Length: 170
Image (tube, rainbow, N blue to C red; front, top):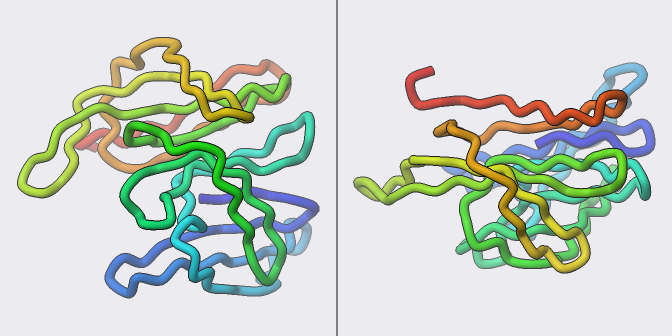
């Protein structure tokens, strides 16, 4: 997951074989690596991140502290740490999150089934997410079956949402 805040780009990655969360901090003007840190809080493992253009706050879909579910959270980044403020546990698998010009959060949720110990996506939906309460309101089905985590973004000029989809046959 990646987000830019105050001229610094924060790239979060997770290496499951090591169990390590890594946040790399880049100067957005020069592209130079400023710092790297490894948060110990599992909540820092972001699925996707977005910035509310009305407030500058960063929201994300992250894992809960015990790793058993996904949650909506507010994240405060610095070049040395990230503070994760949980808002609400989300009752589904999630693929991405984005924020429009008015500050409304949207997210792509996924439905599916377990097969040989793996979650296999069989559908996905566009949802509105209340950034204060985390209440999710389904807008509609996407008709897509994303098998891998991706991202979405809302164009600030047109206010149209764009979502990268990575289907299983891709």
